Image 1 (tube, rainbow, N blue to C red):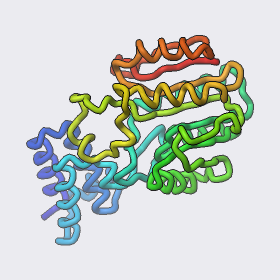
Image 2: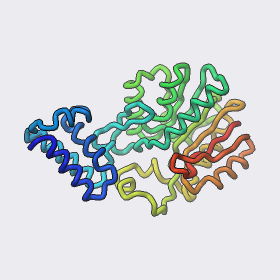
Image 3: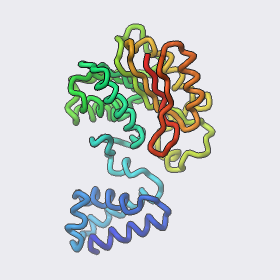
Image 4: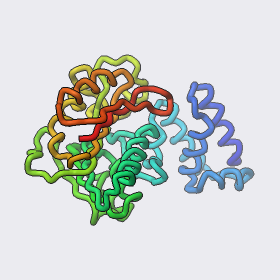
Length: 284
């Protein structure tokens, strides 16, 4: 069987399974199975595949057809122009989360902060903090992560991106940290678990494959959003930035929460590219 036959059959199979990004997923999975880049799929279109290669492609296609995210199958995910190693059990970075990086970079530039210190709560793969560090060579990051698997992935990505000397990882859940003993930060960022446990809008593939502790929170999804912002508000420098990702229907209550903390000015709810409420942003 030739490469083009495998690719075309895989694309059609995904379309039949109602997978929206059928062509992209097939290209990513087959190129990864064959250990070539996506462009080479078309440069080697008529190349016959061995039985070993066909078997590898079929296994990846089978896993995707069951709903497993492509990122877990290929063990990597692009974020802010960088590649992050990932494994099942760690939250898959989302494109919309890149907006946190955009806002921090713009804030640091506007305020002319020379050596910004960043705190990332629930850091996961490290995608937010590392993307900031890669774009601000003088920045330093302290990250908090409680999952042992995520900690290992975080450190692996730090090494791959040559950021070990600018990163400190606190292996703990946020609530167990005495933040009064920590320094102050110019920016505090987080993509915390914020989905209501009873939310029926969550995609089946997300529920089935991604880690519950990185997705869901008590108190209608507000538990960590409210707790983490309250615990760390005193760790912001004067005029420091705090920005958390949140759910599409949490903006009104989170804005009221930040107002009630009596620590912030310029509190705003930001929308993602789909026009949905996605971030709470405030300056101390």
